[in-house]
Length: 331
Image (tube, rainbow, N blue to C red; front, side, top):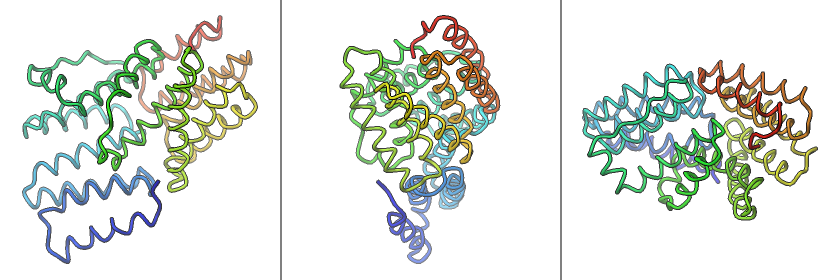
């Protein structure tokens, strides 16, 4: 749980760079400080700091930290809902830079996110790893964890239930390193793994374990929303909605779905406005309220299209027809 007071050491670290003359470390300090700021300041605004980190790292000759700032900026922009076509091009540049610097771990993780972007756009070719890449995937736990998260995320977005469950269980099996909690990706993983957990809890025989996972995510997002309403409020509301749906508390669930949609719109997270509308649509299908379901599905389609997720738009149409026709789709 981070608050404005947590930024005091961050601001001190940045100011000391100039006073003490430690410009050689500037890229690294700015990269880490920016990630902490994402928990307190609006996400879209904090990403600009990574440009400063890149410039400072290049000025000191530290190409490694320049690359890290580039990758964090790219991944953060994806999390912020930036246009997917532009994101695909930016990730291609970051992957090329990683290859040139022989930073294979970073390259693999960037490739995994770029693959998710391509799938959402509707042009998702399968990833082909080099022999070195396959060796890293077989041995580096953080890269493997990232791979299973991205695979679970894509499966969730395309409502591929069995693949989603298989990969999120493998993701949960890896213990997250303590330092990774500093990065904004930690919060995003908590959000989507929470949404996945509540979905599985509604269907699984092991309801309690999945509900506990979802609740842990919900409580974390609630705390982060106290630090940054802008970035986290809609995420917390959507997890509240999904948990209320799990409990069959439909009146409260409906309230939180609508609050999540409004908050995501207010704070300019177009992709998560789309997602909140889509999940609300499945909820209304379950209530047999076809009119409200279609209203939300159509708004979700519009927002996914605005994001550039044309592949997701095509998939959504198929799910809508199946859902409204017979409620046989997993909700």
